[in-house]
Image (cartoon, rainbow, N blue to C red; front, side, top):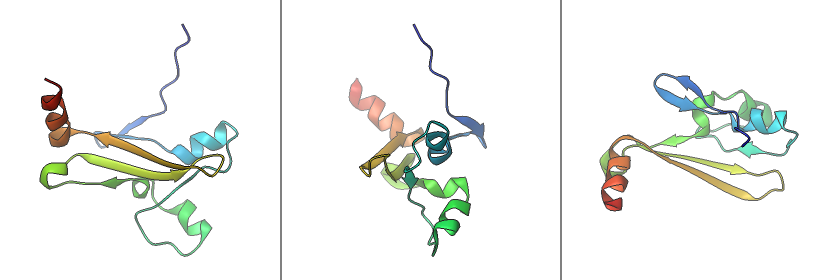
Length: 96
């Protein structure tokens, strides 16, 4: 069985992942992640901090959601969702 290399790096207790850099490394040069900050140019988008690739919800019943919106290698719309902390406990409870 082939084991896939993890693409996450630990930082501040949160997993971080640079989807654009890893996609580029794998030859998918058209992958683009939206940013949660306003940028006026492609260069500004590229230079935005890694943390601005995801929209993290930190309060209310959705506390712990993290969302990433991106364009895939063929221009398709992608959405990645991560559930941690309080919102994960809600989901875990629903499974019982």
